Amino acid sequence: MNAPARTHAALLTVALLFSLNFIISKLGMNEFAPLTFAWLRCAGAAVLLAVFARGGARLPREDARRLVLFSILGVVINQTLFLSGLAFTTVQVAAVLITSTPVFTLAGAILIGQEQPTTSRVGGIALACAGALLVVGGEGWHGTTRSLLGTLLILVNCVSYAAYLVISKPYMSGASARAVVARMFVVGTLLMLPIAAPSLWSEEWQAISRGAWLALAVVILGPTVAAYLLQAWALRHADSSLVAAQTYIQPVLASLLGWMVFGEQIRAVVAVAAAMIFGGVWLAGRGKGKLKIEN
Image (tube, rainbow, N blue to C red; front, side, top):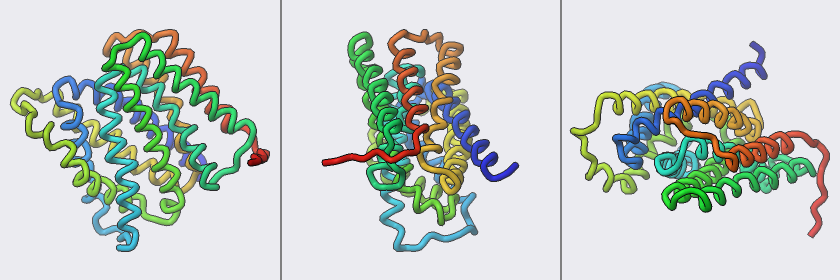
């Protein structure tokens, strides 16, 4: 496989793993509290990644603050808000909202000058954002307060993860993916502990089945360790917006699995919002001409 093919294969694998994550995590959180599940996922991944990165390239001490920022955006906020939001809403809604990550990523990349604004890109960002807001509005109108809260948590998570992709892109181009991701999860585990401590203390550990522990183990190995390493590697070979754009595969697979496993029905408002977000992602990836923006 040539380099572009390897990059796309890595990104496709990441999308598949993240799609499975919706189902497996929701099954695990039938018994684990969301914050307990999030911290255990982070801690388990930190141990495995530290072992995996042992003996590899070392990161300069002066990069410590930068890596703490990466960890806050890409691990702490991402893990906490995504899993909490997923526990409160449906797989279908969560998966559709995740597809807003590419447009937030592109918007951030344009703001800091990594990528050029064009008419189609700006239009795509606007269309996809409107789709994301339609999901939020739909949950507020037709859903429960719990599902609306879950929707908002996931949307904030998307913005945070998009910021991580944009900010880390230049650094990932010259750093060891294994070392960076391992450090991020070690730092993230420590930063998340005060947040998850009450949940960990009150968790009914004896009531948790082997199936729930197995779900946690699978989430750590696949959608966490493997997916983060592949994505960090891909960031060295592709624009941050292309890395994020692979998320459009997730709602299709996740919604199908949600229907098969949980019996979730696809609602019209979510389907329309998904079409708007997909259209926005496609439109944002088209134009190459520069758009003049005057004050």
